[in-house]
Length: 317
Image (cartoon, rainbow, N blue to C red; front, side):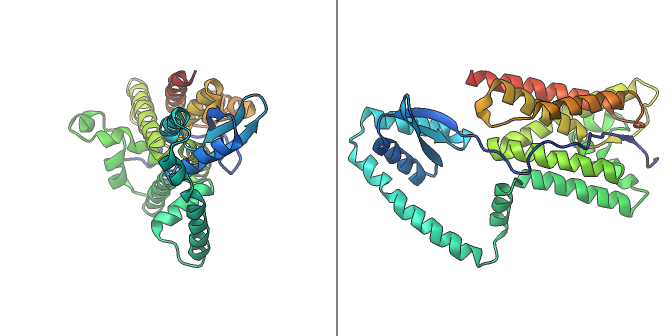
């Protein structure tokens, strides 16, 4: 099998900060600072990070960090409003100061020790990397290393590519609809794809969690790879290999673009210039100036991501 392929490539210009910008979501207001601090302390003991801010018009605002904890935190706030003098509630809230002191001591001791693997992954997340983002990048780099070490990497293609048709998929090898995202054809190809995956993937994972990012990657990869296969199958390029993370990258771009536009409170945001440059790059790839490019994965991935982001935002309107 020829060691050539249609590259899924992305434009190298980046306009996303290396750090994940966290935007909290407001769950409600309380009239006094004491009440707001009590609820915030209770939430802290319950493992829910929150923040209290003065709101000149409505009193004291309570903000929640993690989106998947909003419903639970809102329930706590409702319970407090119904019975603000609940002694067990206040008693538990007073544990927050002690827990914060214990956490500070643990952090100080922790800094002097070698961190176990799980803690390393958590520290990566705070620096802008999430465990799933790191894993996807690691797999891509490992596969690329295997390709580079063995120029005749038919064994790898036999496990991952779709050029043999859908017969293998119909026989149960459904992973072939996803695994082409780990194939890359050159240093620039994998370098820029991994840069964008690092930024976009880390933003989604840091704000919405690894499960949401994993679902997005699988869904976008499946649809975009299948679309590219069908286009190849019914064109003159039917026998060529295709691969790359750019279909997923364009899908994540589309998701963040729509989610940030229609649900600003999600904490996901792209500068308009970034979106324009990525769309321009996709059009440039269509011209053939950049060589043989898997254009279908770009546009199919973008369409899936935009639709997913738009419909995900409806529940917050």
